[in-house]
Amino acid sequence: MQVSDEQFYEYIDEAVNRTPPIYKERLQNVAFILEDNPSPEQRVRMGLGPNQTLLGLYEGVPLPARGGATKLLPDKITLFKQPLLAKSNNLTELRQNIDHTVWHEIAHYFGLDHSQIYKLDGS
Image (tube, rainbow, N blue to C red; front, top):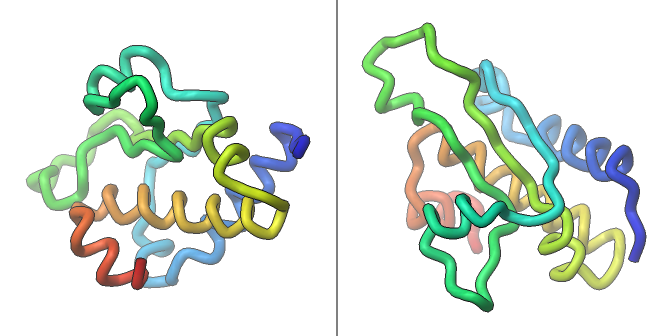
């Protein structure tokens, strides 16, 4: 399956727009980035083994940990194109995987851990 970076960014924008309003309205100063694969540094930082990868990664200071600080660098949510393509059999699955990954990483921005995220999205 071939998908241009421009089309991928459109799918990311659509996924952000489908984020529940309670979260979307409070999402501020977050850059959404598309990379082909996690960098070696990201792989080490996340403790990934040779056969593991990431679909997305939140990097920043979650809202609950900011202690009211407002002058921080932008948070970054990176989606990884090649792992998302590899997990998807068609465009419908790709869009669903992007939606799920965007939500998952936005939830980390709000300080939710994996168990809370899975409970909210039912996965």
